[in-house]
Length: 311
Length: 287
Image 1 (cartoon, chains in turn orange, cyan):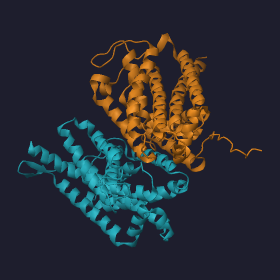
Image 2 (spheres, chains in turn red, cyan; image 1 turned 90 degrees about the vertical axis):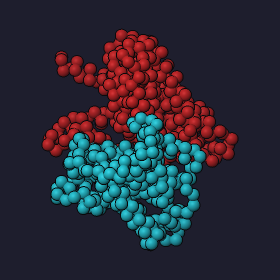
Image 3 (cartoon, chains in turn orange, green; image 1 turned 120 degrees about the horizontal axis):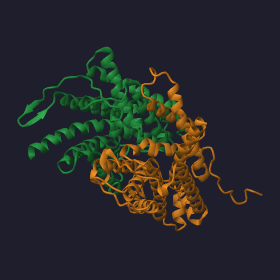
Image 4 (cartoon, helix red, strand yellow; image 1 turned 180 degrees about the vertical axis):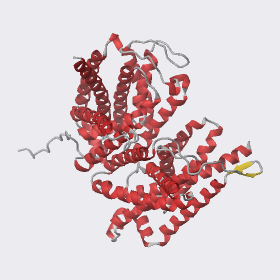
């Protein structure tokens, strides 16, 4: 009986993190899968969302900004509202950059955001981080899981509606053929900026949920590995451009990532000096294998049939 | 005040020569293969640890270990290209980019698994600095600067005097034109990786001599290296040297005004300004 309840609580923990990662992956899908924007600064927006929610909702703060004690929904809304101007400025600067320049620029921005939270203790308490972020409405772990799942569904529906809408079609047109889209009279910079801001806000939402789930955040949690790299593996593995694929990718990759922990535990300790390094090694190799053998992912994007083809 | 500025300027030249070595390799890979190689910083780390292997294992001085580490890293870079990048080269440049991100993590994980994550040094003990009036210069710094200069001259001779070097510049300049004139693309690509890897190793070893060895030492330098690449103009080795020195000096001198923790942000700001106002790089013209 003990074992069963342990198993259930592990499953709840596991699925909540999958849900948070699924939201991050959906956000990336708006930017990369739909628009073709290569953002590898996911961790930055994740951090902005988490810190915003933490600062707005905690009850007290000793020496850093915070202690507003606002309710949970206000924290979520605040996280998104704070992200909009930040993402807008970043998107404005980077919107016209080529893919590889955008990649370099976004990873730089994410590192600077992390440096900022690390060094500006008045705001974020520096390395020591912000503790005491409680779960909303007195929910336990299971209740919080339902809340996260509900938000995953909501974000999925939103992104899916956006994908099928004329707006989403323009984004995909920009991704596939930018000059043709420009020739059709679409303002490319405009649409790119919108996609960037929307995607970043979804990432910030995931950050806020993460902060409430773990209850304590520090700059350490927003290193590129967890915040950015895993999300990319999830989207590529699941199938970029496909929103269900993004969610499936989050589930599968987090499953693999969690099982590498067991695998690393099985290895003789003399052989593997650092368990976490071994796990990173395995997940890196996994990504290389996916990229070489199945670059379109588990659920590839369904492209609309060409007219005249399906008779 | 002036003494401080001069001292920081000297430090900047040192950092700049390390960045330049990394940036020359990165810019050649960028030029020939058309993708930002995100594992370049971790190739630097690899090179530094290869040298440590030789220094500790064979009890040789660092400067003797340097060429060995450069050869090992060159072989590693060519090997990674053959095993991974070559297979996905034809798909999309972006897939290569993601793949190089994965390579970066794999290399760092390997370093951590083999050598652990604590700080290490090549030689213990304190070097007595030379005093030039109010300025202090470490003998190691002079050594690093001179060796880096020699390496850069060697690259210059390779690019301007050898057939392979000319072929490399041609591919970087105009891929299609180079291919229809019968340049052996696969061999050029192999050479690009070999030279990029060797120079990255040198940069890593120098960084290790100047400070210490750590699994993320190269990754933290990746952003300044890319900044130097972009400031100098993509695919232009001479521009990359200039970019490296400029970024290095700017990063060191910025500590006069803002906290030292934000040094990477300075490199990044210069890069963004370049991308907005002069995306072709500061120096224009032929390679």
